[in-house]
Image (cartoon, rainbow, N blue to C red; front, top):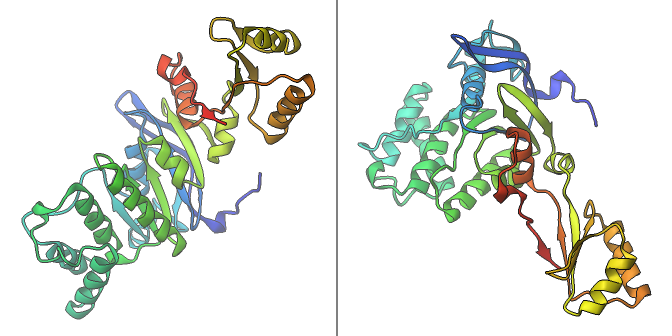
Amino acid sequence: MTTTTSHSLAIAAKGLHKAYGDKTVLDGIDLAVPAGTVFALLGPNGAGKTTAVKILSTLVTADAGDLHVDGHDLTTDPQAVRAAIGVTGQFSAVDGLITGEENMLLMADLHHLSKQEGRQVAAELLERFDLTDAAKKPASTYSGGMKRRLDIAMTLVGNPRIIFLDEPTTGLDPRSRHTMWGIIRTLVTSGVTVFLTTQYLDEADELADRIAVLNNGKIAAEGTADELKRIVPGGHIRLRFTDPDTYRSAAVALSDATRDDEALSLQIPSGGTQRELRAILDWLDSAGVEADELTVHTPDLDDVFFALTSSTVPAQAAQSKETAR
């Protein structure tokens, strides 16, 4: 694994610790987020994801830790950090009593832009987020997806280099979620770093360059989606037969396979690699055995999440997520 230098890190945290009374929320965690990437922080409710965002965005003070955002020390230079970041929280900052355009102009005022520059930036962002037609309408009339787009557009008024998105798609319908994913990808393409917390594991899988799983105040695991999936056992190839004699012949030859005599199926441990699949197909051909169905199961982020955040894996997580071949 390549080592990233501190100069190329948008966010660097060592020993981040936060407690409320006798409850430790973050127990000395380390985070390293390269510039121009998407970093996803996963974890069950109450794991400390939002607390981490609040600390790194200067909204809450850490109890301990060496923390740098955009190269600035959070303790000694929080104002420089605030100038470099944008934050979209779990709950919309949109004011429903005024129009979308007025929300944007209010943000421009807060960033001390001139009236002319504020109007120009507002118009450009409203167009970029497909909100121009609704700009003169009260934000209270917007759909959930429109409000979320306006929320992120407001965050971009200050042209931040780093954006914290705390569960940005919670409550959105699938189409709105996919629209939001496209917006996030576009932001990263333009050089913005995105620190994302989410409850949707497919979202992290789709978007994140690196993922950390937070549990009981500690980082349980970190890596790319593929790296995390490899730490969970349980991958297998399943062969199903309709002819009992063919099934029995295959079961005798594949002695390592787990038998299901009732379903006439064999389950072979496998990491799902092309080499393993080819070896099984070659064996079937050479033995003259023809399986009626071959399916491959590889662990996904659901499996990783349940394995890392619970002592016992729920039954629904143990069910095979198989793709017919």
